[in-house]
Length: 71
Length: 267
Image 1 (cartoon, rainbow over the protein chains, first blue to last red):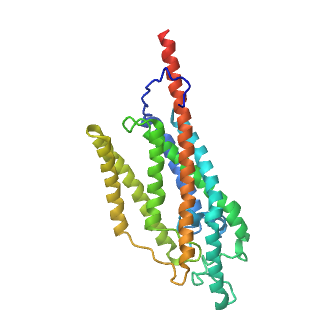
Image 2: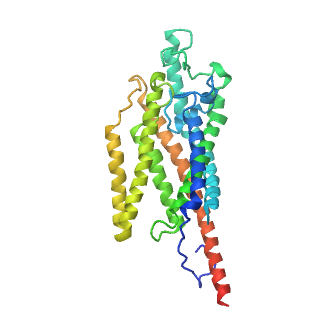
Image 3: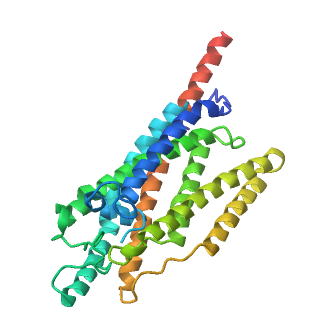
């Protein structure tokens, strides 16, 4: 249905991408995820790298609605 | 298909999911937040004139949620661009992670197509990252948690989240062992049982959080928690639908390329 040519439907088996090729992307994405999650979810709440509360206040509603502990 | 295309597609899908989640949150989440802040302000007003918040004047983090507070960030900013920042950032990051996880999954779950494994990854991701933590440590609206326990609550929440994700990885490892010799049905059932067992034990053993004051209106609490679940559900749903669509397109292109190459070789 998705392809135009019904006469030749090749049965292509999905080939796994080698872990070697995936590992650096996964590592970088995981590190970035930790940083973003920290700033959206915890900065100036449970932890505080920067003084004040502007980061907390700015993402405040999102922090609550995305399920992170807040007060 | 390679890691690059999975990551790009994931980021696009996640961005879209975050954007939709923002719109949904305005509809289903913000009213409850406003109600909760109104409750806080009503409670604070008669007590004393100097604005104080629920955390008993602990001045380090003491803040109320009304507009007249320090920092110059208004409720309008919090509910508009601030909320959008949070949902879109988290959406893009989750999209990237789901994309990479789908790249790992493609071709590693029996004969499932990359589109099917991507759908599976997204569905499992929603259960592990949103639904399970939501059930154990449901989100609370502003003005219901104590500032004094934020460290403990954060540790418990992220601890449970980590256990849930590790349980998924354990379940997949076990399921793939089973799949090597037995049916896909058995592999799925055993994998599901492993996840439920691990998370079930954590659910039973980990300390509860019970801080919402009895005086807080139950309907507002319920509305907020459901609103939070719908917001995150919208993010994951759009992310999943968009990502499977994009992976489908990339996969069809791969299949067509292979067919063309085979046809050319046969000439």
